[in-house]
Image (cartoon, rainbow, N blue to C red; front, side, top):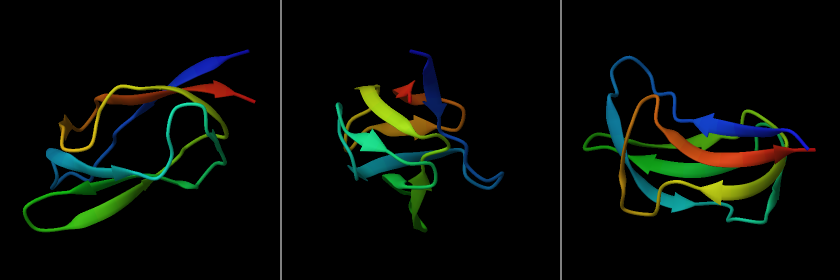
Length: 79
């Protein structure tokens, strides 16, 4: 099975955001464009959708963690 890391990609105005909560956890199956994680900044909150379908095998960040754009947030086994 192929594995792929999911990378946080924010808009140009957002350099970093905090993880508000995960919609899924390790071991969960996900579909492309399914809500994956909720981020919050000082000015806004937004949902980050999965760019691929597969199974979450590892998360690299926890709720409350600060994430910078370009950082790995999860690893998925492509199905």
